Image 1 (cartoon, one colour):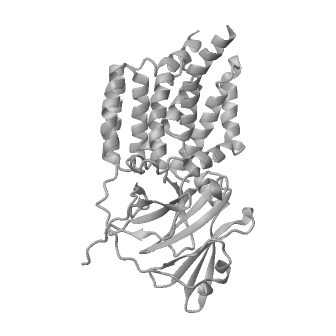
Image 2: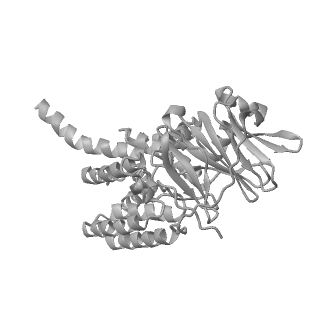
Amino acid sequence: MNLSAAYGLLAHGLLFGALAALLPLGRFRNRVALAATTLSLLTGMAPIMLAVFGPPSVTLLALGVLQLAGLQPSPLTRWPALALLGTAAGVFAAGAGWLGGELYAAGYQPWPLLAALLPVGLALYWKRQALWLLILAIDLLAYAGGLFANLWSALVDPLLVVLAVAVAVRGWVLPFIASRRR
Amino acid sequence: MADRKMPERFVRLPARLPAWLALALFGVGLAAAAWRQPAPPAAELAAAPVVSLPVADLPPAARTSAQRASLTRLADGRLAAAWLDEGAAETAAIRLAVRDNQGWREVGRIATRESTAAAAFMHARRLGRPILWAEGGWLHLWYEASPLGPGAGASIMHSVSTDGGRSWQRTRRLESGPFGGLGSRLGDIPRPLADGGVLLPLEEDGREGPWLRLAATGHVVGQPRQLPSAAPAP
């Protein structure tokens, strides 16, 4: 057992709980979320997710924990989702070798990335986005604690991209459906 | 009433976090990340003895493996070979044999789906090609663990033995790409570095990919796309 593996397993379990907490279950919401977390660990769903997607990013875990805690509305609104998608598109394209690979590789010795995050943090402070600033701080502390070898892995992951796509598309699809029904 | 307000207050806590406090935490995180990041010296290739054998000289069980066996020379001069014994999916394993004066002697199964799952908490449907690498008294094993099948990419696992391959510890997944267990696969022959680290070859879609730079401790510290130049001879 190692720290990264333990983190990955528990984080995927919590994400299952957060997914279950999205259901409109009223006063049973917390119990169902707890049951979903437990079941994902016991039935092997969390180990399968860990094997397929790797450990989830701390950003996604933080959003899942906020969902489990019942914080509404979620900080992942349309513009943060689009910003995440833009960043992840670059990282994943680099990881697939399409952009020369340097952008993803920069996460192993992330001086340029840390320098780029400084203005991002100041912009979030200027916009009074304390929650996103806090999530970014936890991402950085998780990397500093040795949970990830690559800083990008603490910031973004494939499941977060799926979530961001869902949030971004919902912003366009729901008004479109509503206008068609009128 | 007080009991009902407590969780509500707790839930609202992150949303009411003062921006200056979040900025201070961000600054701490930034400083900690800058302090923690590795700063390896410029990569320089070290001379590496080429270890190869004709197939007929490999251990009998390794000759029938679909993947080629990986050979390395141990610190005491003996040869060691690791190969994938695919068999049935449930019994697939990486096996190890050591050659001494009496010939090949099989050490046994050094990685299985079960040992991978137990160490890394992740499901492995199939195992893939191994790379064996001796460095001083340490024996490193890298191998692929594929969650969906060989065509869908793999995680790269790393194990270490300090007793010539009899026991293996510190099995963990290496972060080799952003796609988790659907990432790059292992290439052919690692290259040693002058600082004691090693460059591990990766394959992307069947063609040569980047190199994963590992420190002497086995931690990933970089991912160059080109091989560095060789260190000048002493």
